[in-house]
Length: 176
Image (tube, rainbow, N blue to C red; front, side, top):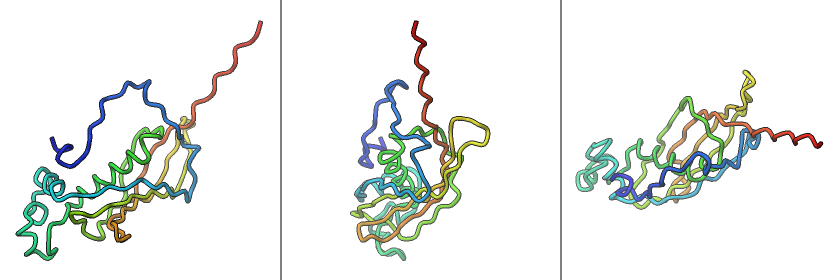
């Protein structure tokens, strides 16, 4: 399984009632920065991902990659984006009333990710817009950033998320 080869553990499916969001649309504000955690990237993981999804030689063959313009093995940009997504889920979305994302507006790969790099993710809220239709949700526009262990920015993305609003409290029952 690719997840195991990439060093990820899988999570069992949880019943809907077991999933409890602790943060809602109202808990976010423009300028807020959310640290997403860190993760080290291994050579075997880079090769496994690239073999499955982006089998270019500088992602899959360390010897041939040394002769490339990269001077060594580098992670696929799509692998880098997937690593960011995992940090985003583990460090943010698992605790949020996340409904959906209509997409990513922009993604930039600024520096190569190499075996042994430790990546750190960060999310900044750029816009927070309540639903105009009156639905109990809002839209967040965010800037995602991924840094390596040298504190070099390796990837950015601008995305949109639809986040549920805090549930209304039930009215107390009238007393007799």
